[in-house]
Image (cartoon, rainbow, N blue to C red; front, side, top):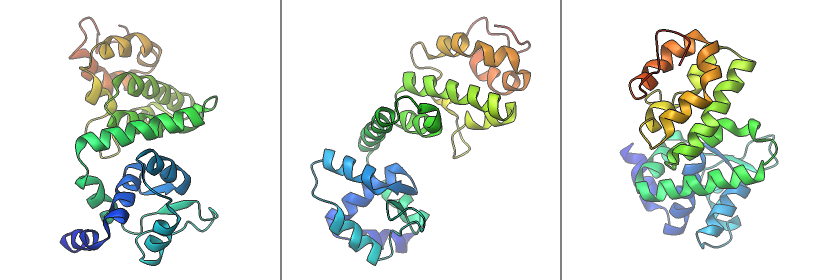
Length: 212
């Protein structure tokens, strides 16, 4: 990792800045989304920067994306860049990106529930995280299984889920109990896994039954 950090440090500042924004979008990102966020940050046109990063082997083009989708060639490079951002900057970029894709996908948001949960969660916006988290859990129950609904209620790093991360924010617990009642009532497995988290913070939520 030290070798990667040194490689990143040797990059010109403008390229580091571009890659730092890209690191928030994920290990693979859309060049047009990056351009929108970089423009919002007051930076210049991205074409030259992306060409240099492609030549240097830091980014690559997905074969079937006509060059619009750009993965980092190394997940470690992306992780180093992301870790170097201040928490304030990360939250700001996650918020801007979440709002961008939310607006762009209006009317077909169900296709991007996972991305909305992730980015609003990382932006520390509990209301939006819970709104889309519940919709994602319900969609998973409808489409897959209780096990899948539980999985999507956890962070991709395997640590705290969006439920745990935002449960203590004002009004979130009450909203989970009210809005998620159908999920909790109909799926005992979901209750047994997620119910205790809510039960620890919501008086009257009975984790031993399917009622609230």
